[in-house]
Structure formats: structure tokens, C-alpha cells
Amino acid sequence: MTTSPAALPPLGPFRPFPLPPHSDEVLANGLRVVTVRTGAVPLAEIRLFVPMPAHAVDPATAEVLAALTARDCARRATAGIDEDPHREGSVVSVSWTGRRLAASASVPVDAVDWALGLLARCVTSPDITGEDCEQVAGMLAARAGDRHTHPLTAAHAALHAHLFPGSARHPDAAALQAVTAEHVVALHTSAVRPRGSHLVVVAPRDTRAAVDAFAGWPDTGPPPPASPPPWSVNGPAGVPRPGPAGHAQVMLAAPVPARTDPVFPALSIVNCLFGGYFSSRLMRRLREDGGFVYSVESTIDDSLPHTSVLVTYATDPATVSDSLRATGQELRALVSDPPDLREIDAAREHMTGITSIGQTSQSGLATALIGVLGSGLDPGWLSAFPALLREVTVEQVVECARRFYRPERFTGVVLGAPGAWGDAFLHG
Image (tube, rainbow, N blue to C red; front, side, top):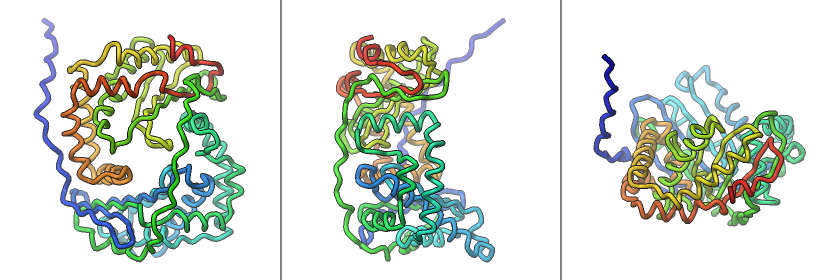
């Protein structure tokens, strides 16, 4: 006799996820510092964000500055390590995200003072020589072509160029090769400033005293203001680019409010139920019903000069038109067939769970906090956000979908499948 499987038990009651004991202060030089005491693992997680948006700086110089700072950190991190076993296992990295110079460190908790001192020296007093700059610029230039062979990177570069003509994000080899030490020093002087920057330290012990390593960073005022370029809605037809044979990479984007906007909780739920998790409308339509994709992702993204919803998937060139038609239809259905309370609750529970799970590790909490600070919010927003999600009404979700998820608001690129795709997306 065959028995049917038992139904899954209902979810338990919502339990708030309080932020562990923490301090939040602004140093005299303007650097905002959040230290959190939590975790059973004897590690310290450090994150430093320095605002450096692509529209305000030369992207090639920013790439070289980040690579030089990373090299400088690596040199200093390995110097004398044999005499200091507490540093064993330390990982330090520096990169430019297109919006920020980002430094990250994961170190044994006994090495947290050393690591903060290392980052402070590397960021405030970088060792920039003409020889090092020439080597790093040449290395980045040699890799520039290979970087754009990755479909997602190439699609993002094409999307940025399509949305913001004349505002580069991904520099080419010639631009990188032309960067000199004088360019890097000038950028460091103008952009790498404590005021407006953020530092987060998460560790199983109090680390407030250790952040004094950054107290000597001179306050040179806030970075010069620079407004992001206007969003150019050139239509969702896309910009075809060469890509791997048999592979078309689709990337669609539309501007949406940032985390600081009161509509953001409702926006998060709309995005989740549309394409943000495995049971979303777009996943079912493109993968299960159409067989066009293996996966599709819709995210609230900050990699462009404006916060945007970014829809990304890969498909066969022969099915680009059908997949775009289906995507446009699903966007219109958010208004013509609006989500009900059951669908909203499923997305709400997923978002609540993902938000809480992301904070359970020291690394996840540090990354989440630095993102919150970089958005201009307080650390407590992490704990408040799940509660805000639970307050979102059906009417707010429907209104949010109507305002921000109309097909005509989206612009996109298609790599690997030349052609005009606007009609299929807008009128299919």
C-alpha cells in the first residue's frame, strides 16, 4: 500500500532578529565606524567602503588604484609573518566595485589590531611608485580582453554603455595602459577620504579600541559632489554583441527607488515574487513552462549609477524572441493578474528568511552592515527590515508593481543574438 507524503508543517511564528551588541560612532575625521561583538568563531571580519562612483572618477585609474592598494596590502601582510603566528590564515583583499573602493579582511581575532593597522596604512598612505603602477596597469590591460569574454561581464558592460552613453564603467586595455602614477596619486588625494567612508568590524570580542588605527587619517572634507548621469531609456530592444556560439545573454534593467525609500519593502516583495526565487512567476514561465532557460534572476541591484531592478538570464539565440515575449507578458500580468495574499506571503517569508540567514555568520553580518551604511541607513535597519516586510499590504504590492515593473520602463541588451527585440518584449 502506497501512502502519500505528509504535508510540510506550517512555518513557525516570526521571531525578530536583534542586532548583537554594537557601537556606532563617527570619528573626528568623519569616518563612520560600527563594531559588533558576536560570534563563536575566533575570527574578526572587517569591511571598509570608500565612495568612488564610476561617474565621478576615471574608471581605469580607479581599477589601477585598487590593484596597487591590494598589492601593497599583500606585501605588508606577508612581511614578518614568520615572527607573528597570530596572523596565520589572514585574508585581506581590496577591489573597486564601480561605486566604492572596498577593502575586506578575515583574520584571527588575535590579529584584529594588526589587520586594522594594515588597512589604515594601505588606504591612507599607499606605496605608489612609477614602476609598480606600470606593472599593475600592464597586468590589468593584458587581462581586460579576457574579462569581457565572460557573458555576464560583457552584458553588464554593454548595458552600462547603452544606459549611460559616454559614461564608461569597464575600461579597455588602452585606457588601463595609459594610467600613470601621477593619475593614481591625484585620484587618491581627491577621492580616498575618511568623511563619507564606512568601517565595520565584527568579532567575538570588543574591538572599539582597535579602530583608533584610523584616527590618524586626515580629514580633507567630503568627496566632491558628482551627480550620476541620467538614465537613458533607449528602449528594451537591446544592444547585440558577439557572444559564445549557441548562447545569448539577456540583461534587462529599470530604475527603482533605493533602500532609503519607504516603498523599498514592497518593492522587495514584488521583485521576489516576479523573479527573485525559485517559485517566482518568471522562473515558472521561462524555465518550467517554456523551457527557455536553466535559471533566471531578478535582483535589486546597485552596480549601476542608479539603483535598478536587473533581470538576467541566458537562453538559446533561437529562443530570444520567445523568452523576451514571455518576460514582457509576465511584467504586464503583474498588473492584469496581480498577486494575491498567498503569493505575497510566500515571497514575504522567503525575503524574511534570506535576510535573517545572511546575518547568522560573522562574514555575512559584516557584509550586510557595510551595505546598509553605504546606503545611508543605520545598523538597526537590518533588524527592522523583516518587520517592515510583514507590514506590507496587498495594495502596496500591487501599486509598486504598477509603478516600477511596466515593460516600457525597461532597457536591455542581448549578447550573441543580433537583432531588434523591442516588439517582442513590448507588444508580444
